[in-house]
Image (tube, rainbow, N blue to C red; front, side):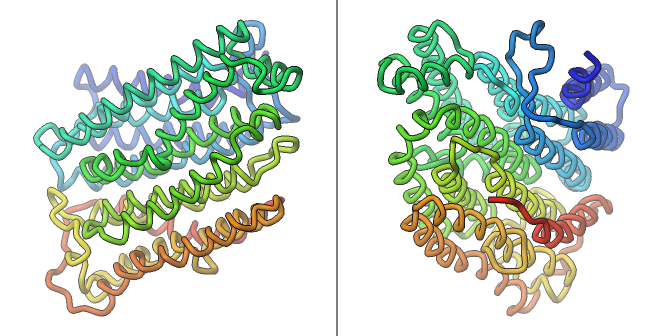
Length: 471
């Protein structure tokens, strides 16, 4: 009983913290700056609880009470650590962001925490209805965060697009769940795995249709081709800290449940390998084509996020369902999250009030006036491009190596080509920062939190690169 409680302690801390922040904000008992500190403490405490929990293998907490709805494994625990880390650094950079952008409210930090609560539940979900509820908890919080600046027309457009497309996605996930229940009389992952192992994936048409709708929903949430159309406009319309949180924590949570579902049985994974092979290629090169033509840094980063989804899909294709550990996927997610959160943390205090500095040209000469900020941004961009000795390079190395070991040599080669193409738009910003004269001083009223966040994440880029994993 106590061990089960400890396994769920991070989720309990985040959920209770979200309710506490909401109630304190509703009664006006918490200032905006204090709310950010409380939010960071919640994520820090939950991170410590998650890191200290010991596992002897896959465990089902409170199996009798929850009827096996949740499962905790090493894979879900590390995914949870990434999500909690993303939440902590998002709250940290948001404190500085709202010093210049005055639309911040205490409820903002409650929504960040509620979204993380849904993400943690999603990673541990071992049953489709639980996954659906977790997905909606996460999504509803993100919808509000995207449109949090009610005076911004771009934010209103972004939240409308995201809400409409998200509603369709939720409908498809619910339809897939209903079909699987109709075919198997259960929505539990273990029942689905048993049915596929016994009769084969194509034996039950309802299972095939249900899996199709559910994978459709997952591909939308991770912005894979051809469901990537929303991501650039939504990221562009969101405030900078929210964009960073969506690009990292949300992607980690969805890829965790995506991998858990796809790896239930080799037959289930084998039925989708061919489709994921082509989707990953189209996602990588489609994202590159979009990113190359962007003049806005946020839109470029949104398009590059599509490309990184392609690399993660390569890892999904290459991984073995028989001995699934997810180490390559988690390593890449950690490396991508650190780099992406870092550059958004830097933008949160460099973009100025109203995010007036948003184009590549606006950052010309940054290295002459803010050399440390320019150096940190350069580290993050080089990591995204996969330049050694950064974590991004090691992440891509592991992805490419796992693809070669799985016999997916074509995917490995195309992944390398895509990485070379991506250097163009990453180096473009570096050139603007270092090889042009400064047009302004880049002064801001921010606190020390966002610059400190940027420094910590820049160090983490190199620290993570030194951590070895087993393929």
